Length: 238
Length: 238
DNA sequence: CGGGAGGTTGACAATCGTCAATCAGAGTGG
DNA sequence: CCACTCTGATTGACGATTGTCAACCTCCCG
Image 1: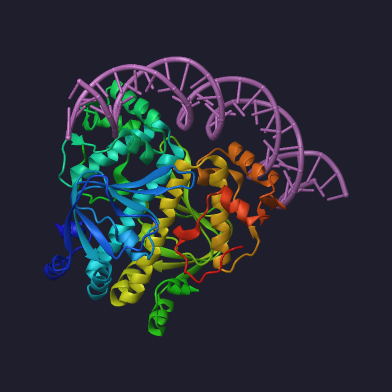
Image 2: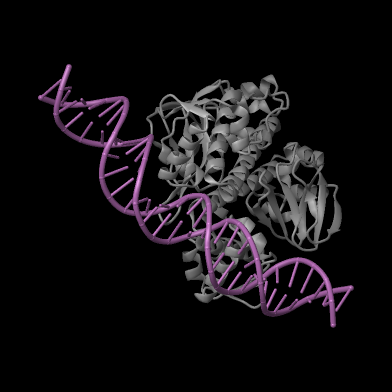
């Protein structure tokens, strides 16, 4: 479970053992519950063992912006817990299982085992790369492109994590999709229907996405997976 | 010079000495030159010794999005150099002095000296927090608010670095401001003139900004410096 | 069967982009 | 010192994308 960290950096057996030996508390969390709230001083980091969560910020006018979406296996809260004060909230999308790990033990482990520290640092760097792509996404692409891009990103990440094939569950309401892409829920609806009507995706229910035509969807979303910094031997989607 | 890292994490004398002993090559770089291009595999990280630089991405339609702006003292390129492949470009805004440090020596130092490694990791975490704020900025705020927010961020960062007081140089064209805030240069012009006409800022030339009324500007920009994760004893701007 | 959350649709308005022209200032060569 | 040129700033008219408001629908669940 905790081994996703080894994805980029080489970890030996003792590193892995040390990770697995980290003290942690596993908890089932209801859908739509907050794990961390903006302004908190969280004492724990957390790892998604199952389910999905989002990170979001609230601007003063009251609007919400989702800054990232997390799937099973993601280390969600390094960011908030290592910095002292949470600059954003973390919330589950569905009922999820989450492992909480005390902040100090993570820092201590990073200092004792440089390999592990580097792996976590690398994870932070990849996170930052995704953030940069999202800035470009909301800043410089139109609604249709943004939405297609989000669907592509989600598909690739689920695939890499071994959680989906061509069909996948997108556990978000259209309002949440809108908050992630910087538009209104009405426009999100029109946009996603547009993609469906053009034959790029199919939706069995509003939450189940089937990618009809990966090439066209990726092209509509101007999607290039380079920013995810996957391993080079990772198979392409189509 | 290299000591800004000690801002957040405690570094002892030997850590500082090790940082200063890093092999590096100092270079003067012309205005508007690329330090790294998207797609490169850079072998060096760099530190701004003087001047300003930006990081930007280009979307397929050709539009450009600036994802961050860097000032003297910033460690600019940890992101690109540690990840193997640059997902964005780095470009100087003005003639600048830059120290290049080989990627491997940084990684080695981080592993030998956990304190230094943690300090650099922390720097990455703060960078990521700024990215998140920018996602919210371009995703959920209107043009006027975005522009005011950018001006506030720049003012605070320059102030903290000891590089400016109430007046400061904003070494960007309006087209670059537009690329940072996700609008067009025409709209950036109208927006910044709007702020000036409402008495929030004054401009001696188009590059010299004087903040007339910090409270109103911060409020117009919905600016809350928490996301910069400054030290708590950092004095407020006004 | 009723209630509620989320999805869908239409009419209209506001923000912002596009295109194109003009202006201002800095540097350059004669 | 002056014409020339180039880049960036400024402005107006117009159009496109996206937001707002409001209604209605559909499905799920107790």
